[in-house]
Image 1 (cartoon, helix red, strand yellow):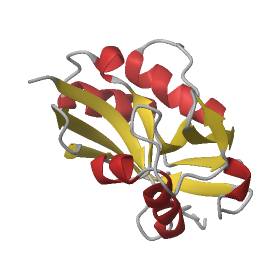
Image 2: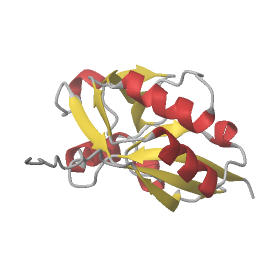
Image 3: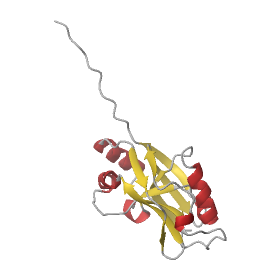
Image 4: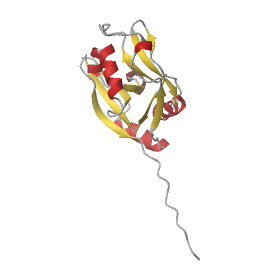
Length: 174
């Protein structure tokens, strides 16, 4: 069976309720396979990169939480629908460069409906999708995920993005 591995940024559950509802309406197949996310690195990019190598690269670059903002839905490849990233893309690419050692560009987005799945009876034109014009999410973890065959994706490991906390200032009297 074919096994795929990726690194993904999952939309925080509490903040993604409305988004998940829209995804379920537009593409129930995709919403059952994987929650709302941004793919950070695809299987062809991470190859055999081990969990310890990923952790070391994240620590080495001081990776911190990443905030991405997404604009209105757009159609792609027939009946696919995505939310394009409209802010935070340069930080996304910096994180990819630290993990992969390359500056290969991959446009961050959230897929609402995937064109490989059958078009849902409730599929709607992007301008009628009930979402705010801009959505922003802060991602504090990178998930290493795996899909075996056509099964749902599962999380293998999570890597926490470290919050930068300033050192305490010490005042010396003298």
